[in-house]
Length: 219
Image (cartoon, rainbow, N blue to C red; front, top):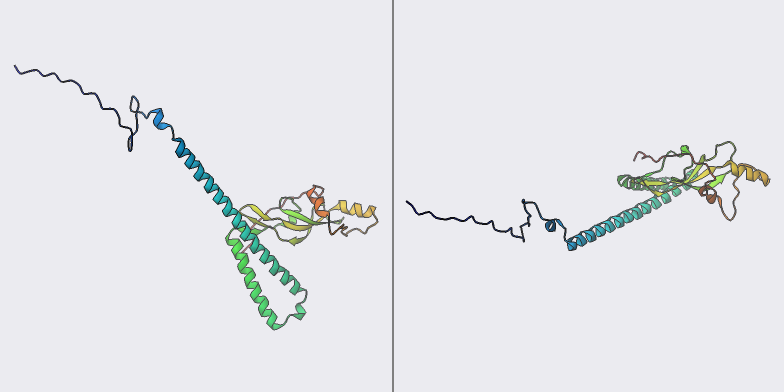
């Protein structure tokens, strides 16, 4: 008969916890301690997130500032062209060459805005909307419905569904006509005091609002 040898079952070695190892509980599932994130790592992640958000906000602010600077340059060119249109009979052949060059620069600036998603506010025929427009003047005009935009003084612009600048407009307001009639003033005129205080009328909600939209013009 051979010798019988007693062999004891070896106990499994405990799971190592350290680099590349995860402490496990009974059944092979990760323990609660292993699932809990380290406070230091959480603080680092929060700090990185705050820095990223701050950088994103700063980038948006810088982009808006640059786009508004380009818009100011476009405004200056358009004022020059408006002045030239009033004196076309005085334009010399040499001046026409300069004007052509200025128009080329204007087109390039407008293209820069379009390439960055900035476009003028359109559809002014929809009427005054305080979201898109700023009332430069209110005009007593009984022939037009309240809130009708009679003239655009300065273009408004949108960028990525955000308003860069509201359009500055002249708005028809029958309330102004009634006020002028009571004071013996001719209708269809604008009564101003210390320049104009009509902007407050529109922003106080006295002018009915007719909706308008912003659309992208052809570059």
